[in-house]
Length: 146
Image (cartoon, rainbow, N blue to C red; front, side, top):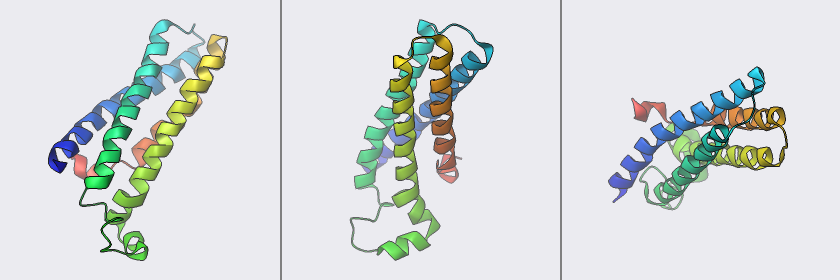
């Protein structure tokens, strides 16, 4: 079961990176070119929100069944986890930063809906989605991807 969930989590991550990258570029382009906010822009930002939340749900399952996550096994103390870069990545850094990524995307999406004109909408999306994108890219376990 773990292997199947891991495969889904890994392949879905490619989609997440692609969509969040597109949504971030779209928000930045819309802000800097001062174009009008269109339904396409709404859908792109919404799709980024949806795919990241689905990835979060898959990630929560992985967190509790992965052999790399040793919080609950009782075999490792916190000091051991923090001293080992791989264990620290999978037990602390990746989950924490990815949750922060999703928080920023959710906040940006929610705040942009309250803006009435195009420039503030794009500015809000650009700020929050860019921060989320940088955070996301900083804690992807790249060695596992390639």
